[in-house]
Image (cartoon, rainbow, N blue to C red; front, side, top):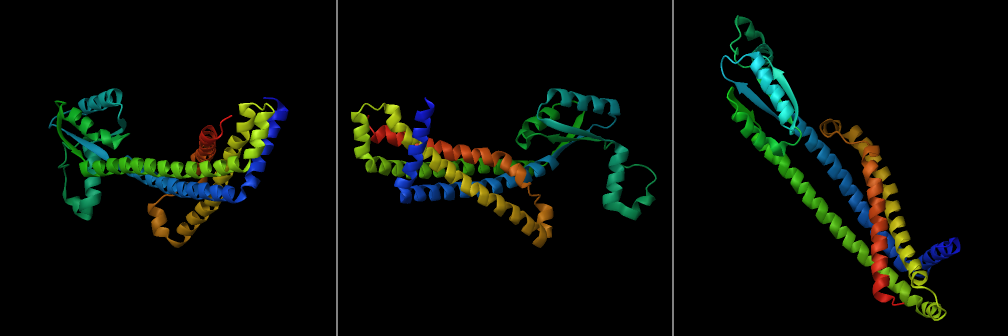
Length: 299
């Protein structure tokens, strides 16, 4: 494309925004509202996923061993699991002495002084933390097949709940995104259709004097892209200030809640929200206008 054609196409696309200003404003407002809701939803979901991830990191499997199993044998099991089980994130070896000290501190307090020997002499264990708690059943089955293992304790209810929450979040997110996309594309399609109707005589003249298909269609596609770009930029600015002030407000007014919910910094949220929102806005602008031009503008 020549530079002159590029600037003509861009200029006509901008003019189209003004020719159908009420439809343009309606499309921008609707896309902006949709992407604002998407941005708010994304921020909430991302923070919720962070809470779930933090909770998952605290879920562990405790492996106890048969009486008389040496520390070397336990460490050998630890090494084997670290090498051959990709779902394992971290394994901690807890000796019998450490287990006894922890038990005394948590349950006995000053009454522990009456014990001269360690009653938990065979309580050495492995604390296993997973990368994904949904893989817990498979790992537990494998560990239970090891000869020296006596018992495996796991947080099955917690693991199932966290896995279920992750699946629910994924389905809800996908459903909302699809609805937002369909609504936005529909509105852009209506705006471009009106633009074609308004410029019908001008388009016929351009066709009569030999204008190419691209030369006629491109301004309408540019119009859709500009609508999508503007419609995505506005809510991004609003969400930035809303999210920042919301974190400050919750941190100041609800200190107990803020200690439980560790909100992600706005920069972390926008590392993905910014490109995703712009891509969605520009993408639906392009798709909506391109499909409409192809359907209604026969050149």
